[in-house]
Length: 293
Ligand code: SF4
Image (cartoon, rainbow, N blue to C red; front, side, top):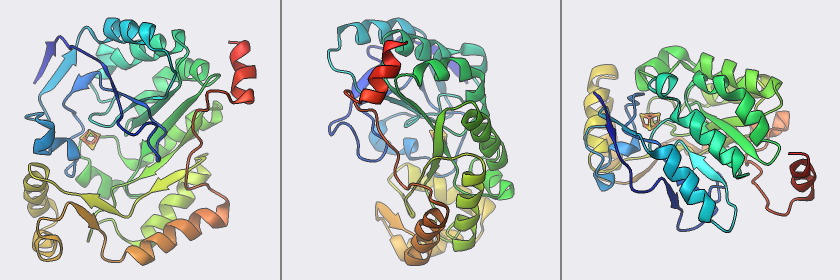
């Protein structure tokens, strides 16, 4: 179901900003709910009080609000989008809220970091190129190199191969782009050979970083849904989770050392950074680009 709501605010400042992994100072959510239906999605956690994740709420005043909020901010910081829902989920093709927001962010000369599992982001390459004269990063969350697996665990998102292709397209257009390799699902995607393959494919498609964490989080609300989906797609595995993790929040994969080795040595062999570079307000390179903006 899709319906429209009026939002009160559009940007929220992170408590510890910028965050150490993605360089984000402000989080922006233009929608509530997400159509990608990833079986492990953390947004289902009760703490967020989001209700049914598949109930999509379009914040119809989002663009005006964003403009108003940016007008009165004094310090620039990277605006991140993609943490509570995917800014390029299918509904964005028609609604174009993300496109509208990128345009406002460009006009206010703010840095941006887009995180997505969709190839629809390539539609906005023109705006992203404009934004990258200041700072723009596009990260693709890719959790497995195999489409057969991605279609089971991220059923309504485009398969991994399309995300790699979208990344390659953006890289060829000169954009700063890379991969977020998380979550790594215990007993499912924690295969060192799959992680090595993912890193190699990412590099071949122009990734400039791969940020990985070898585990997943599980909380009330999210856990129940995940376990029910495991029963359907990976019968027998739920029991292994219950035995190993019980009600733990942070679930590191059982073979974390091997997975980390595959990730770090795979990245090191091809010179691929495991951290991204962030927006720096007084970066002389960015300033000189900015003057031509
Ligand atoms: S794309 Fe992100 S927010 Fe959307 S369902 Fe998947 S994990 Fe959740």
